[in-house]
Image (cartoon, rainbow, N blue to C red; front, top):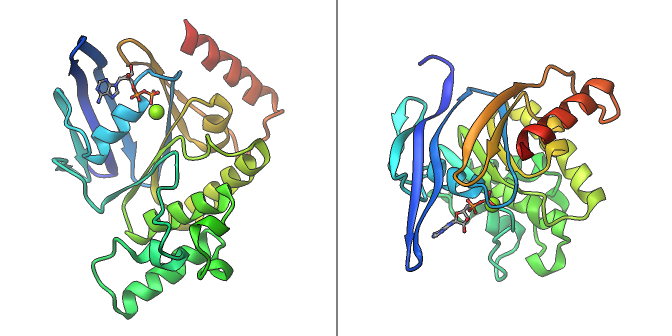
Length: 246
Ligand SMILES: Nc1ncnc2c1ncn2[C@@H]1O[C@H](COP(=O)(O)OP(=O)(O)O)[C@@H](O)[C@H]1O
Ligand SMILES: [Mg+2]
């Protein structure tokens, strides 16, 4: 088990709706090593959010198992923090209070954790601001800080930058890379953007749809920070695209 942070074994998920049953995931398995940056790419609707929710413990799989640090996941836990597509902040709390909200303690140690999280996402100067005063990118940085304040072992991110404009998105991607470098957290990112996965991750799981399955895991053996114009980057991008749509 040494070095394994997240492990999904043969996860499947079928939803039963009034229109019938929908098989969303079929026998999906993955392992993320401690400190690894792993991405899952797939087209919209292929089951990425469902998979992430199962790993987060927010959804029960119909079959299979999830482990975090060797312990079977049966529900949400502070060892796995989630960053969703939208920031989900409380509008009546300021930045600092939003980050501290879920923390059990309100002591000096908790204050330091919040301080550190603010610093990591570069929002120390905006601690007193309220969500309506923040840009989309800043709000998403607060969501990242809130996740980091739980001091999780793994950060689970569900298309965290999809709602942002292209420039902000690029900026946030490099910030996330820096946060990963500084904290050494295990990061699982699900995204429909092949370029985003290639910029950030060490390995990429390619997911196909209806039902969602893993086609292949690609190693990205390129130095950081990555150059999207590098021939190998472009080659991998084309390759993953053909695998996604094949
Ligand atoms: N609670 C649910 N009940 C029924 N179907 C669902 C539910 N959640 C997701 N689905 C279906 O599962 C499929 C995959 O959804 P999702 O995991 O959100 O995909 P992605 O995040 O890759 O876009 C979609 O067809 C969606 O309609
Ligand atoms: Mg989704």
